[in-house]
Image 1 (cartoon, rainbow, N blue to C red):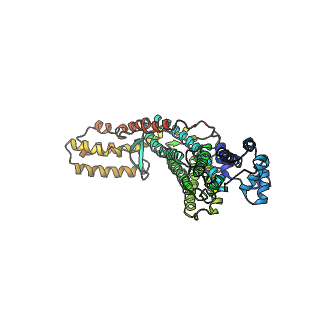
Image 2 (image 1 turned 45 degrees about the vertical axis):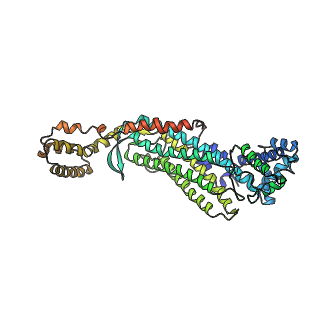
Image 3 (image 1 turned 120 degrees about the vertical axis):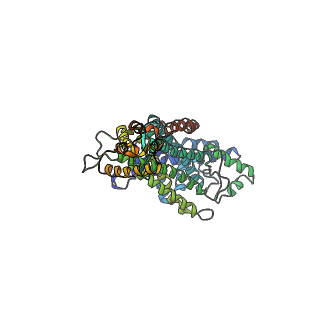
Length: 479
């Protein structure tokens, strides 16, 4: 079959970055498996087992040159992926053949490698998340004081600022970054636990020396960059860990979906536009259309990630005693694809956030259209201060407001100020006093200050604490 004659995952061909695709590749996973076998053999030798130096040297010499076609031949014969890799590694490192995988079960490589890949993928996602946060910080700073209509129930409520709204998106992504950082910090290694998690085989290899078995566990974990192993396990590490990982990715998907949905609504209002290419086509039938396709893709991929969150919950809930294999095929799909899809979402979020266009004239026009309604309470107070009856003035204002709302719905301008100025009930109030209350800056409260305080406080603190995560890695992907 040719390359295009069989199914190709869109996560590979359209969405996920090369870095995340490589991390979950068979080639990279094989390299992790071999490092695990090397770490096990080295630790066993150092703790007293008679493993020759030549075995260690040959294992180390072939960490990254596995012939996956040869592995496949073995797997066709044995119907067992781990044994296929063991036999091929033994072919390349013949001095180590009799010591390879000593005392271990398949989960030693499969589960520990999964945790290595998950940890490294979480770090990559955290770097992606920081890039999104930095792009939104710049946007929030630039538009911190630009008044805009705030919506509740997607109905005009009061005023906010464009930058203040961006801090709401930022706050969600900040919580996700904190969640990922915490998860990376506490994610354990499975370690050397044996067939049913009792370490019985290792205890036998070391002649009943419990301390050597504990030290073996510590050394192999340290060799793969983990400070600790899980305290107890069956044959596999608890799938609750997978569930927690998918919860963290699902949290990112929630934030990204909220963000992209808001952008789609605001693009409909003409206030904020996502970036677009010079020759980009919005519709094959309607040339005028400029669709928010990137925001829509974020929403779409986020929904997929959220569906995998529930998948991990079901897997954790249905494990049998010390081990069952009904999780295996599921996890081969769910975990890598959740990371690939989340990676795609964050690459898109960074691209969109760095290229947003604010139509300030449209934003101002919408504010101007709504301002007279926003000013009604202040105008009511002016009328009372001028000697009017509060309840009577309220009724006059209600009647005019409703009439103006109907007129605006028919396409007329909002002339509430003029109607009130001409009504005898407000005759004692100067027109200019009424007009002065239409300054939008009177209605967005502390929004500009909140932006500054939020960016200088929680955002800066978080970014400083995560300064070690590299956000400069190339995220080239079609967006």
